[in-house]
Image (cartoon, rainbow, N blue to C red; front, side, top):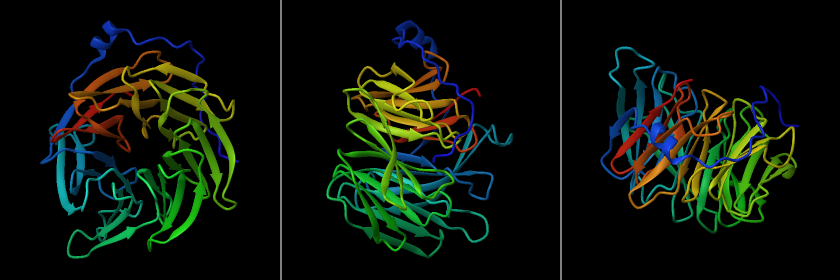
Length: 347
């Protein structure tokens, strides 16, 4: 079975609509910004240790992926705000639609960078680099439609899982071979690997079902239901407490405790114009962030704490896209028009 741990912090409060006056009080400018040379479509902190004090960060634009390191003043008193060090820009044939880091990416010893991208041509690209002369790209084909999300197996990084509008979740090895196909009942929107158990995979479908698969049998062993008519756009497994799962469906965010019920423990309205992404903090199991669908001018970022009926912080980013949390700090990043916006929250 899935491992259980951590306290049950989920309350059964009645949904309350966010108060517009309170929203103004909670609205914050980004704690830090980093200027980019182009529009940012995706941004991802590596959730793994890089072997150096700084965290690896990658962001993708129209035909490139920039890889760099971030160090914040909360980590090093000599840093003024944020220190972003660009390591390398990688050419990418098309716009980057999704990106995942390999746990094998490290900067100590012999530097190795490995990440995988998805693009509109329905292909995955596995990029491996020593940040010098050795750069390799493997193109993986198999999906029949748009790829929504992908993830590396987090313990050794020898497998990749991807989900698509083609109603499949596909598994790949590092040679680019497809090793398994899980048939879904609607488009696959999110995929998450259990942090320790290499054979447990979570797949969230647009119709509102989240299934946990045993990869040995390739069968579903548990499922969660949104009980909701709106489309599920994004779901995330809390890696520091794997009994908790969160998602955004329609305008709402939902939280499950998988030991208690297949229906959500808590559900609240968040974004007026439909929610787009849900991500748990890695540093604090009770923090999570949601984003609204990118608007014409700006999209909202809500940071939430379990047990608080309202968001604890609200930010906005010009045509923002992507959402990722720092590995050690209660800090998240969103991409936007020629910049990265970082919000630091109190623990």
